[in-house]
Amino acid sequence: MIGVFDSGIGGLTVLHWLLKELPEYDYVYIGDNARAPYGNRSQEIVYEYTRQEVEYLFNSGAQLVVLACNTASSLALRRLQQEWLPQHFPDRRILGVLIPLVETALKTTKTGIIGVVGTRGTIASGAVTREFEKRKALVRPDLARMEIFSASCPLLVPLTEEGWIDRSETKRIMRHYVRELKQKNIDTLLLACTHYPLLYDQFSAIMGKKVQVIDNRAVALSLKNYFERHPDIATLCRSKSETPKRMFLTTDDPERFSNLSSRFLGEQIEAHHVAVL
Ligand code: DGL
Image (cartoon, rainbow, N blue to C red; front, top):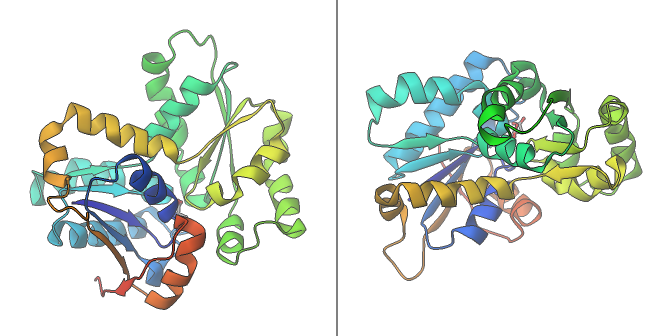
């Protein structure tokens, strides 16, 4: 079974692509809605909350967990992989969303001038920029230059959760957030937040035709590739039954979670409450 973790509802935009590209696997999704959003929280808190949720998923039978949250991938993933996992669950795996997104942006860019938008925590951590620096030589050795410009867009999480997708107020706020990125003439924009794919069309329209916008499909394609390279883990996660399992857990109100799910996942699901501490 694959565990999918997010601070709340946003990771469903990642799960949407996982279900499309890898439907033959069992999934358990957990959203820590009781303590969301994580975007403005400190590194220590994001690490501790993420660790508790991942532990819950492993204890529920997940062999591999995808941190379908950019903030957790930026602030907690490395420490979980390097310090916690080898001691507590040495045979399990945790993957994040940053590497697939960064690699896709690198493969897409022509000029090497790339923009990144995310929560305050993601942007302030510098994790996305570091990932670009680490991967450039490997993925795009031909690229003469690379410049990464980033902007945090903290109001976009509550606005998308409120369903303010097509509101003029939201577009005005988005234009404000990306003004500097536009001035830098980026040719690729990476949406490094689970909620922003809901605003994909709006970002595309604001940035203009010359800018390619990268969203979460990259994460699913990368997991597919990972399973090809690790068939033993793929076998453990693949469903043994004709109807693969889909379980949706939230640490807060399951009704609100279920109501929001159609917008973020593309289908209405039934969520269940769990207490994770
Ligand atoms: N899931 C978070 C992310 O992708 C956004 C919501 C939050 O701030 O918790 O960064």
